Figure 1 (cartoon, one colour):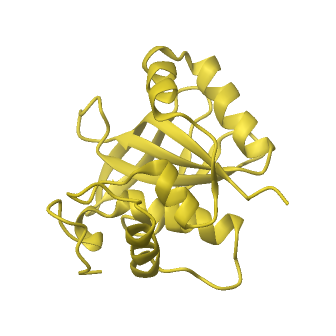
Figure 2 (cartoon, rainbow, N blue to C red; figure 1 turned 90 degrees about the vertical axis):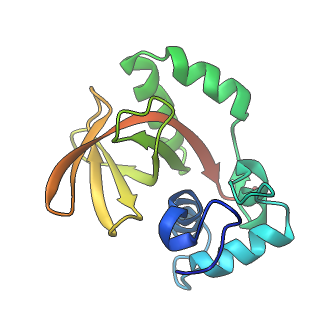
Length: 173
């Protein structure tokens, strides 16, 4: 999409976080009627889901898309900074086993802060995690032990390393 996200760029260029929240909404809230990133961006703008330069405010965007944001960004950052693979597995399993989705920040360009977002929604029989990648629409499988997923970009292999993740869920009845 060429819709603007403020000074950071367009949805098509830098909207992977917004698109991951949109995919979570479609998975959790309304799988029969697909919400587009453009419509999600408009809802987010109305509800304060972005900073003035277009970056996502996670809790506000979740609310704008009728989802419950289950994390505190500050506590989440501290957790992921020191989390062991076992801690990560417990976090992912707890979210997915309870029916939540995860909006996951990954690194693929050696940026320890992360440089891309994907959305995880289920585990396979081996306990690995299925994630949708808005950059190309592929499914990426994140390994349950290493928290690395293998994919390709422009025909070249790349790895996604999990940096942090946020839980989003259905509103309570």
